[in-house]
Length: 100
Image (cartoon, rainbow, N blue to C red; front, side, top):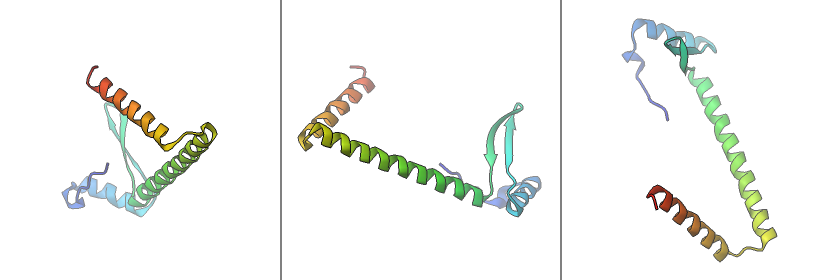
C-alpha cells in the first residue's frame, strides 16, 4: 500500500532529498537505531518495481491456473467435485478462525 505525502509538507532537507531522487537513480535508505527500515525511491523506480511485481504475480497466477486445469483433467474431477472441495476448505478455515 502506498501513502501519498505532498512534497510541500517536507522540510528543506527533505526537499533536497527529493531533488536528488528526481535527478538520478539515487535511493535513500531510512534507518532506525542504525538498522535499515525503509527505502525512498524515485517514482520511476517505484513504478518499475511495482510493474515487475504485477508481472511476476500474473505469471504465477497463470502457471497455477494451468496446473490446476491439468490436475482436474488428470483426475477426471467434475464441477460438483471442485465445489464440494472448496466448500470443505471454507468450512475448515471458518472452524479454525472461530476455534472449533
